[in-house]
Length: 257
Image: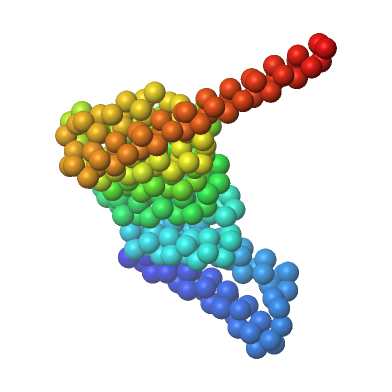
């Protein structure tokens, strides 16, 4: 308890410092100087770092509020991402135990961290989300991670859609989850739109499995719809390739003449 009071006092003092800087700026009715802006951001990042590593769930939720505010103001730096990665692994990779019992399993914290990683939108955030996909056992966290991966849209070497397909397959064997399956289907659709289609065969197999497997009808129908969309991308890509080959052949013939 003493530790928690000491930590709370630290946070209050840090926030008071930020408020003083902002208050002085408001009173002078001038733009914040570079030094004041740097001080405010430094204190904010310090508070985020310390609250994210606090023991209590409530403090971690406070850290997420600060992170949300920082992202809304355009702060998508490495320290923010690192704090989100730490929070996203709370109780999965970062484990605290008392008398052998896990005491920091906070799925709601991990879910919110996964959501904010999608808001960051960076390649580094995408890599963190892929770690969540591999490690987290909770469908509610995985659903949010899949949504964030779709929001970012990066799919180098098909690694993102392959990871999403792996999640669905993992649950499909023993415990099919309709919401997770629907998140995956929507993600395939959005990623395909951003990348001109999907080439990973595992993703196609998962879509077919969802369309024909033990899922509710709206989820099945959505999977069928996305399968049709992917066929259109394939046909368009083939047409573009044929046009490219034709242009190349025409250029070669003209050159020979």
